[in-house]
Image: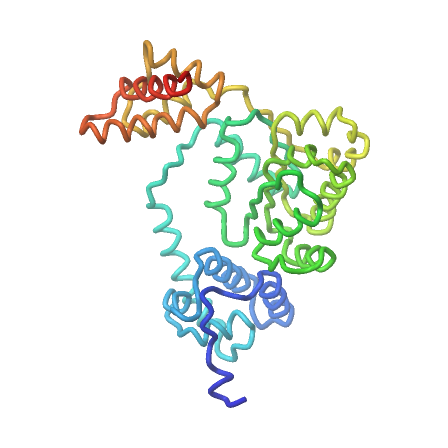
Length: 352
């Protein structure tokens, strides 16, 4: 192979290095004192950021971000770069500050509520204290939205979020865990297990949502296998761990048929958050304000009360979005009348 061929970066559409492979190289470089802890953190951030953004070598996006060519990025991510890592880390540090400032200015649909703030505090505490946190709450209360937002704000390798697949066995769960961890899922369970464990450390927060799904599996033995795998990840990595599910999850852990077998997992959980059955009115008003509406009164308030009771917060937000679309088509300012109209239309369609 010629020198030119060896130096040429591949033209794949995205970065084809698994997170565990890159992290092993970073850890080795740190151990050999080729980089210090701060540089290790910058390199890990940039790799995870580039993976999350879908940057590829062919279009040189990752290189353009820090002022280097794609060949350098290829060598960097494969730990074959012979130049100054100190200079690259300085460039990454400049880019990281800009990227975080830009991310902070993005206008998002997410509205912070009392429920999301409590969930954020639990996530922070789980990571800082390296413990297991349990979050329980009914469907459509805002759990998933808050957890996904926390992961967005604390991304790039620091936070892993995944949802428990429906009727999950341990192999399917391991594949989903690998994908969320930016590790190739195309391997045997034994190999995936070791690669996932190599990927996660005590600076990582793992969030597993919809954990109650594992108890709905038709294979009863798979329930314990999945939960024991989760326990092993926590025990070996000393990561922060948040397990979130409906109150079905709470009942199964505390008094279900497997409660005695789950004692080890339960004892490791020092943080437990029980969410309310319905969001407080202040949260509903805060969300309405994002749409430019004052607190609801009269008929709109009655419709919202029934909606929250029967369908939860998610339906409330969807109807606000539908009402906003209706007002826009009518070239009118959004009002609670549009919200009631949107609700009436769906009610009539449902009764047809």
